[in-house]
Image (cartoon, rainbow, N blue to C red; front, side, top):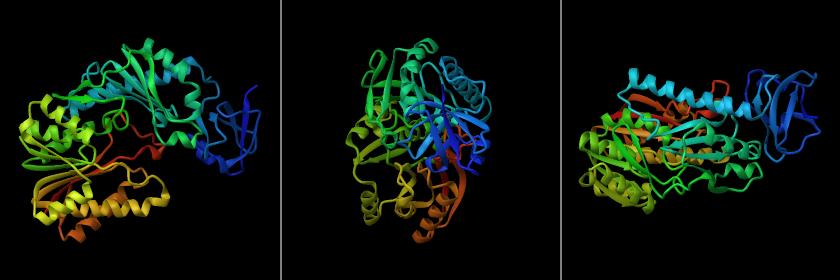
Length: 404
């Protein structure tokens, strides 16, 4: 007998709009359900709404698997959803290749997100492909309890050497789960996996790198931004140097890669070597805020600056502090740019929406006493889609600015 979850009166509208989250405060009662169970969701009048994974330990107490009453949550369900998501990636990137950009992607050699959690109608499940390895994240209790059956089928669905788990993210603690990493299927990935993006090669550490090893969500932005990254380029928060490699290889730019992590910059160095542009780069291990201030004091100027910092806003409680951080960082960048230089600036904080981010950058320009024009607005790559019913899935936003 399936467990049942009943909503409080008036709390059913998000479900009618197919939003996949049910917060604990919206629940009237739960019957015959343990944490991790799939439950039938009803409104206060007893009308069936959805089928969801339940977890009393989370503020998001239930996450919807399906809004179709006749759809069972079984092996066939996960196969349909994963195959649909994977096939959609091929269509999306083929359209880019043919119409929008000179963008090349080999699905057997490159890296791509195959499943993007709620935005692909699979709450808590992320699957990234790096050449012939899959790197997976199970972020919620409902996803965790389905892990074995999902991973067991991945070998059948994809030609793989192995499946590696990177569920080492803080959000699992909110679900009552510990952080976990390790091999789940097949061979363990090597310390470096080589991928191809457009005509460039990159080495990725999927076992220890940020996220699942590479900023896949920036793939299209690297192609769009490179035309502005010429001359003396500062690549702040460089990580493993991808934006800088594009600038050096395509434009012959001289790139200063700045990051607080020496190990990330060592991998950046390897990526510059792999692409034959070693002479075009320097590597600076330092705090970006401190180093940008030092450059200002030295009077150093750049033709282009790229800012791709980590997430500053992790909760609404520190949103104001995060906004100050973004403003300070962008103000420093404005002050370091030559006349008619370009600033490519990003925020990956979901709590900082595009409108707020533009306001912050505008305020930074005012304080820096620089005028600027928005040349392009950027977002996450097509393999990181945003469900219209799930606006929380939009987190990456960027601006390309010409600075007078």
